[in-house]
Amino acid sequence: MQSLSKRAQQMGLPMTIEMAKKARELSATGKNVISLSLGEPDFDTPDFIKESASQAMVENFTHYMPVPGFTDVRESIAAKFKRDNGIEYTADQIVISTGAKQSLLNIFLALVNPGDEVIIPAPYWVSYMDQADYCGADVKVLPTTMESGFKITAAQLESAITPKSKVLIFSSPNNPCGAVYSKEDLAAIAAVVAKHPNLYIISDEIYELLNYGEVSHVSIASFPEVYHQTITVNGLSKGFAMTGWRIGYIGAPEWIAKACTKFQSNFTSGANSIAQRACKAAVESDPSKVNYMVEKFAYRREKMVTWMKEIPGFELETPPGAFYVFPRITALLGKKFNGQVLETALDVSMYLLEEGLVSTVPGDAFGLPGYIRFSYAAAEAELEEAVKRVKVAVANLED
Image (cartoon, rainbow, N blue to C red; front, side):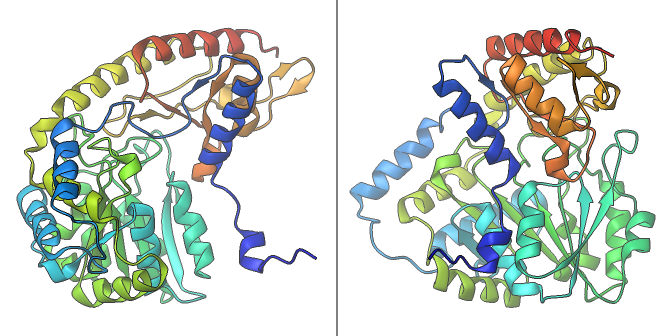
């Protein structure tokens, strides 16, 4: 008799993974599906990073390593935080994990008790909700809109905080919409959080390097009033095209870093030794070494925004970061195809997959119905063809 735990029964696959899976299944039938559903750079890892990994193998970095990571790698990450973000951390405040996703789960497990409130602005990355639920948190979602720049205000946050509030988690640049919180935005949020010493900020900055200059990247931990209440999460997957290397890291108050290390010691131990040596090369490098990727993404962003604004029923602004566009598609809701009514963004996303052969992710997955996420981490020719297919599919809808 099969008898899964309640945890296993309650936890589903993230919708980003589900949509990518559906696209692969459709492709397996011989259909030419263009997948714009996953957030993975279409570039290869830079050669200088791969060379550092090869050298690490030659030097036999192939044994167990300290659970929070090699000391010299953590020192390099601390130096990166000081150089790029204006945050002072010691190596003892750094924990390297098997991807930023594990970093986030470590933090949730370290901080959140059942019944604690976790405040999540929407749209949010899909795993925030599942990880908070896994820890038994009461999740409080703060919705935003395109008109607000997909950002919460200090007043909105203040009104949401209660004595049970334990964590505020957000990403900047944001996945799925590319929003970037300005220095002024963050200063206002920091002023609110500083008044609540039992509230902690998880600042997800995995898209830090994918910023196109309209709004400078600022880390909220650089504000002294919330330094001791903030955990900064980053990694190598997006900015250095290292999704398969699985390296994430945090900078945190030392007591939180120690708690994360305890959990990690029982789950995975230290992150891959060779990948850690590659991490050292990446974080010690001049960020300009990956400018060619940023420039290419910026070019694609302009193309995607221009093309999508021509699609009837699509509303969008130019996102200042990440590699997604997140159009509002509420004007399409209620339209029909072959008698079937498209009632939700999920319906529209499935329609675009089945009829347009373009894989996307509905905003429902990110806590904001009425929008759809398109990744532009793909070749220009693929993006152009995908938009053409979407245009045709939308034109075929009936009132």
